[in-house]
Length: 204
Image (cartoon, rainbow, N blue to C red):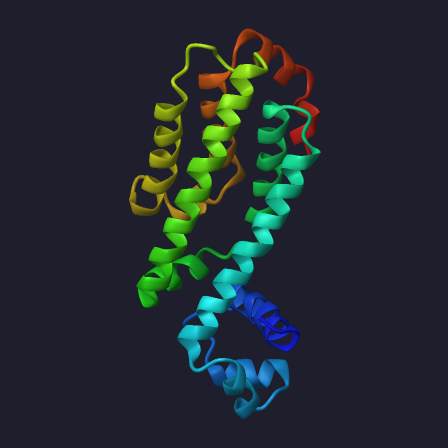
């Protein structure tokens, strides 16, 4: 992706997240960005390609941020605490209609996004569980491969449930409960002690 295309994609990602995907037409993009439609179509064949590029851009940006949080962690539990803080911050910027529009109007792109998220979550969760066991912060007897898939199942099922409203799913209270539910299921006594001593890491 060249610099000009990346600049357009970055600005459009802000529009999509603010207003949703469906409501923003190529005319809107052209007007809001102050470029001609001819220039816009020199970079993207149609809106579908633009949406795809936006999703790829957001994915890459979040992956880079995710890696930074991992690098800053001294152990597996601190890594989870950092990622939790990152997710809370990300929630403030997420418009639920963005993903709703993507799922409804661009199912193929949504499917690709879901598979990409799945692969990354499986890899990151399994790696974290193995690391935490070695460090003595997680229960030595836990079966990390099963826990990894259970965690993914829990996260993926949220997109299909009617037990919670969208506002509840995107609330801090819900995310906090889900996070600590996972933590207390995997922590050893050493891990619980460490958590209690470092709760300030996730306070704002």
